[in-house]
Image (cartoon, rainbow, N blue to C red):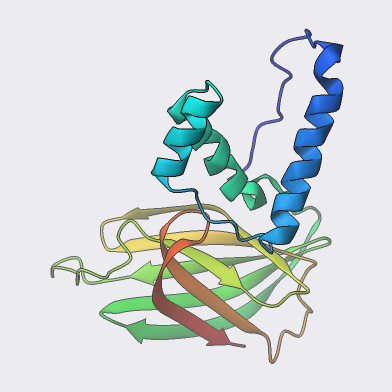
Amino acid sequence: MKRMPFVRPTEHYDLQIKDIDEQICALIKQRKEISNNNPGFPPFESISKWAENYELYEDFLKAVFGTLLSEEHFKPMVEPIDFRKHIAVLKSIEKDELFYTLTSIRQYSNASVVTLNIDWDMTTELPANSHSHSFFELFIGEEYDSRMTNGGSSTGQACYNYVISPPLSDDPSGVILEFREYGKPFKNNETGNRIVFRL
């Protein structure tokens, strides 16, 4: 989703803590390096202990570690500009009573946009492992950054838009678009369901 610009909440800043704040930034960097940027989330027992030892609120610490866990969400997003063309894809996959389709790639000067469509028979009950309340992340390769910008669903269908940067080639033959399903946002609780389109 497109984020609103962050507005500094106050003009006040106690310069006596500037060095401490810089140390916090250095420790965050060290934490990322040691954990290979996959820290997980501290057990609640540890958070309770730290809250007591350092006179902090438990929910505050949970919010801090939750934000650290989702740092990737704050990475600057590429906004597609200068639309160039559509590239026909017309690919579909049927799996577990769900019908997944990619119809085209929208090419911009600085990015590509793809839309994953999901359709199902609205007159029958979906299986328990259906897309309901799921999140699909797009994986292409290390040379590309891809993120879902928006999505939605209604009776019998759902769609999700993804921005890819740098843009894909105008001839995307051989490119593999892999959509992985997660039960929670920020790539948490992978379900094992993967929808793979080979262009």
